[in-house]
Picture 1 (cartoon, rainbow, N blue to C red):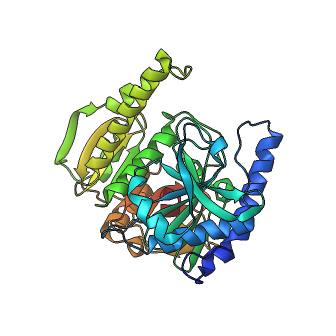
Picture 2 (cartoon, rainbow, N blue to C red):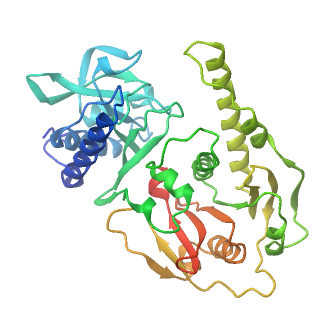
Picture 3 (tube, rainbow, N blue to C red):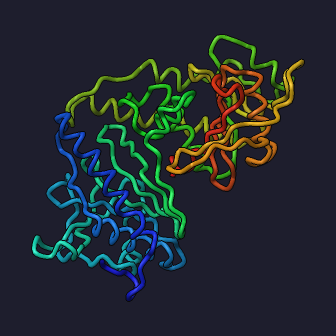
Length: 395
C-alpha cells in the first residue's frame, strides 16, 4: 500500500477497503446487466485503501491555517469530460494534496487519481481535476479533520451522490443499503440512502433532501415541520399567536415546481432554461432553510408553501406527553433503541417528537448545531414516533 506519512498507515482504511470494494463491484455489475452506459472503473482493495489513507492524513494537515477540503475521484483522464490535465502528474501524497487543496475546495471539483502506468497499478498519481465523473465513480471527500466520506455519483443531471461509508478517526460507519426496506421508513430517508428509483429534482422527496442539506450547512440548528397541504390541524400544536406567520404563504418553491422546464440537448435553449431554473430552485431551497435558523420551527406544506417560521411547538390539548421514541441510524450493525426524545439533543428534539406524536401525518426535520440531523415520523408498526438519525447520509 502507498503510505502518505513516511510509513504510517491509517488502520480504518485497511479495515473498510474490502467492504467498499464489494459495494462498488456489486453495483457496477448490476448496472452493466441493466445496460447502463458510461460507468466508472472498479478500484481494487489496494487502490481504495491507498486513496483513503492519503485523504485521511491530508485532512489532519493545514495549509496557511486552513483545513484542506478535497475530493478525490478514481478515474482516468479519458473518463472525464473537459478535464484539467497536469503536465506532470503528482504523487498521491498528503503533503502534496494539502498544497493543491485551495485550488479544488469549491463544491463539485474532484482531483482525478489513476495509476501512473498499466505496469505499476499501485503507483497512483493525481493527474488533474474534473467536474464531471461517470456513474458509480469511487469518490472520497474530506469533510473535516479526520472525517472522510466515501461516495459515488448516481449519474443523474441533479448531481446527486450516494454515501457509502463515513470514517471518523477509528470509527467506521457503512451505510446499510437495506434500511430503506424496513417498515415505516420515510420516503425522505429512502431518497437520502440513494437506492430509490431516480426522481426529478422537483420531486417532493428530493426537495426535502436539498432543504435538509442546506439546514445542516448553515450550522445554527433548526426545525422544519412538513404538514399536509390544505389543512390547519397543525395549528393545534403551535402556540398562538405565531410570531412570524407568513401571509400570504411564501410560494416561490411551489411556483418553481409547476414550471419545470423540459430536458434538452447540451447547449440548447431547453438546457439553458433548465440550468437557470435549477439555480432558482436552489436559491429558494436555501431561503427556506435559512428560516429554520430562527428560534422556533418553520412550517412548510407538502406543496412547498411556507406558512410560518419561528413557531413555538406546544402539546395539543388532550394529548399525552411524548415519553419514548425509537431511534435508528441507517448503518450496518445499527441497533434500534428506545429513548426519551430529550436524550437526542434537548428541547428542539423533544418538541419535534411531541409534534409528530400529535400530528401523525406530519414529518419533522431537526438539525443540531453539532451537525447531527434527525427525521421524526410516526411509525404505525411501532405505534410510536420513530427518530431516524441521518447525518451520515448528509455529509
